[in-house]
Length: 448
Image (cartoon, rainbow, N blue to C red; front, side, top):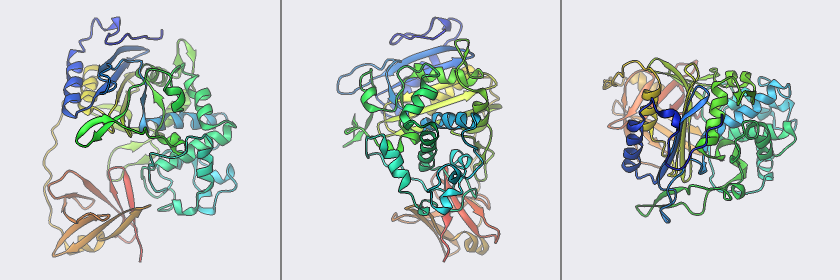
């Protein structure tokens, strides 16, 4: 049964479940982070058990958010691009472990050796960037990819996990090339229509014909509608789908139920199994990355999830496949994902082990050997960091910013003094740091 929500109403299936704490959390977090509005949906089994809008869709008009309103997804788009490419592989159109030069013969030598699996798992060695503005034309994706050189690689493919939006541009272009349709049309046919996601689209001129929550950002210290709206068709596969909580619940329901929707097969369950299998490890972490999904254990429960940020919007989707629970949050402020509200929903829907509070990490002495193996210059595309050794201490200098002292927490982990940002050191065969990872992006040592 497809769930249809009315503005501000909760499904009748909620009689036995008290979602008041979740709604309170959402309102508190919207106020705390000055986010105009949000929409949420929760899937349990094959039903949507919660769907509601919160706050304001447009600060200029005061219109309330409704669950059917479209938001822009940002990087949660990646799980949909991955779905399309993995389904093409299951149809025999591409071998995910074969060099992509087999399918795009004109690629330069180094790029031609990348595999689709490496693109989808962020291990292709491609540098990261995320330009918000560009052409609105479908042709922009192919035009951009055909201009690539081997200079897009910051390190050799397969060496390390490093989150790269452009890797998904290439993955989206493979969907386009293998299907014989534009990326947007291929996604419409292979994923959105298959899941009856009736109002999900990549095209802004289609999205604007349906109820749309306007994106917002801080302008002059105040929250304002983000103008002009960001759009760059060359980067659509990495983060530009327009969708709503109801349509996303359709996809999540298929994911949690072996590809079945409304009693019929919508998508191949083998695709979801491949997407939620570990294909890369985060440096010095138990967490993994599949295809378009992060994989981790959360207080005794295995979850797959992904966040997204696009100018004006933030999104988060968390799924617990074994328990068949999915949580969807959409917001209309840049980068806002309401993490406390996602966690509250997780606590309400899943049996979690007791929360263990993080303990303060002790600062360890930095030795001369540490200084020798860690200091150096590291680069990822145009992004550059330098670690400087001086007076038995280490200092981080990101780009043109002022240097800040680092504190050692282990041989692999360093953090900014007085700050939360951590830097993971990955050693090469010579024992010296070959990479430094911050968050989900890695930087390769620049050799003299």
